[in-house]
Length: 197
Image 1 (cartoon, one colour):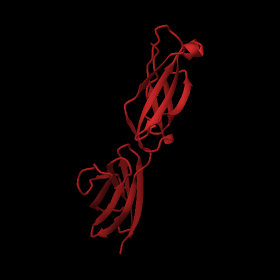
Image 2 (cartoon, rainbow, N blue to C red):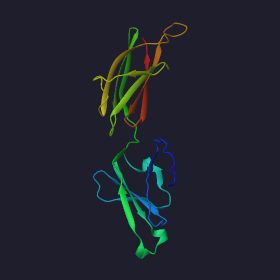
Image 3 (cartoon, one colour):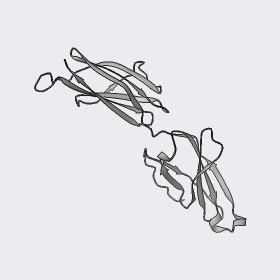
Image 4 (tube, rainbow, N blue to C red):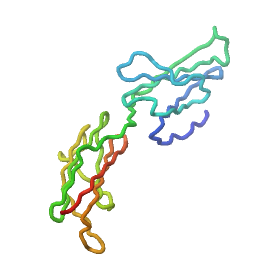
């Protein structure tokens, strides 16, 4: 048995690995095909692969669900008339390389607090989490209005303490930054500047 390379998590690539055996120890060659949800035909990704793995740019596939198929052939060891093939399909998997969007970000000073509202939206996967920072302070987790991140669109409405300045004084201006992540850890951020009265 030949050792396979270790799989490394890489958001920009898709890797497929497989195992194949020929009882006659013939040399084998492989072809990898893909098919998206709702599609009928298999499309070729790569043929004449000599290894038992293949990696490709995730950006080649738009966001959605897919299935891969690997076709094995003993063509290197036989004439065309004697070639045998076998195939295997993968389980369905999903690709999402598009970041979510931060929408309608608004912030205002209310006494010693900041009132912040915004929406996070994604076209394919649910919003996983959101965070905010005021005046370059540490990132703070914030829950959506319904307190459960399980939708393509989540709304946020909360109040947060304004960090104390050193030396203590009102700078008259605050910068609010929010960032959101979808289920596949694609990230987006936005900022707004709040000027005190």
